[in-house]
Length: 405
Image (cartoon, rainbow, N blue to C red):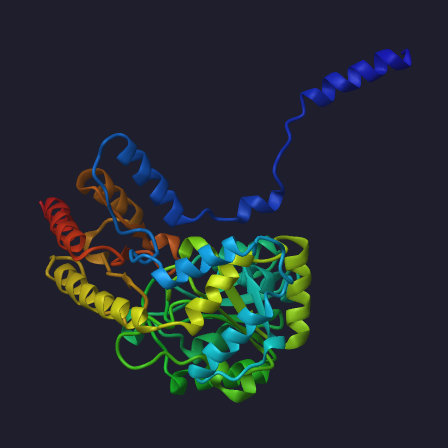
């Protein structure tokens, strides 16, 4: 066969080959929240009124003095790259902010990221090898996707209503193997609103120390605690050498779209996380970091006002959901989600959420999207107006009454 004929034949064969995504993508679950949001937006586009109780972001505006700081930064030309670790001003402001929370750290232990999600991702890439195991209490936010992306294996342990959805050291111990590398904590919790005390965290800290585990503690909702105070595992002195503390400004300062997060970790790990940031996002936006300094060092009264409003909404939605036959809703201690059980309704969480969206125009997230132990529950965000909460719960009641017929 002449060479040219052979090349043409090969081109035809290759032209018919279908390019495929990487095999690992088959194991990456999509975001249930964003899936519901997409469907809700589609229905809105068709003219249907939707009450949004699926999205996890405050419905308050970013404080005006923070927005002004960003405008001033832009006017001053702060539009260039910053150091990949973050500006010294913001990293210092973070250490000052944490000190007020009882967490002692230094600027060298801080990395600023474009959102807390990226801090979590950098931490996982920097610590986990293929085959390593990560213990994740469930119901939980979608950490599973990140764990699988880096080739590690999520090991879920159940948290229960009976124990207020708090992690139990006995269950952690049962899940430990020779491949366990990391324990993931998220308190105040999404989706349950569970809060942990220092006394409850100490046995967990002892286990992590004894078994040489990394602890990744996602504390993005730490300012939204309604009774008492949420404890951080990083405030336990011996945990500084093995804790990756992640936080951000999205929830506390109503800055979800600004994408500004940070992590605190041992200096050696911060250095490795910085390599990942340099190879991916480079840095958080310079004018956003300037606004972050103002948020952390400026007036904090906004937070208490927002927290008090969320407290009122929490009490209202819990009362109303519990008045519906077949729904059982515990009172969350933090964050801004109600996570009622619908097990008595004899319907899957996905079917129930689809029914609410299509028949009542209420967008929510099925518990099945929060790990293997979330089924039988639904997450409602009360980061919406009291008017919407009252209207939505009336509509939910109507749907449930139809199910009982």
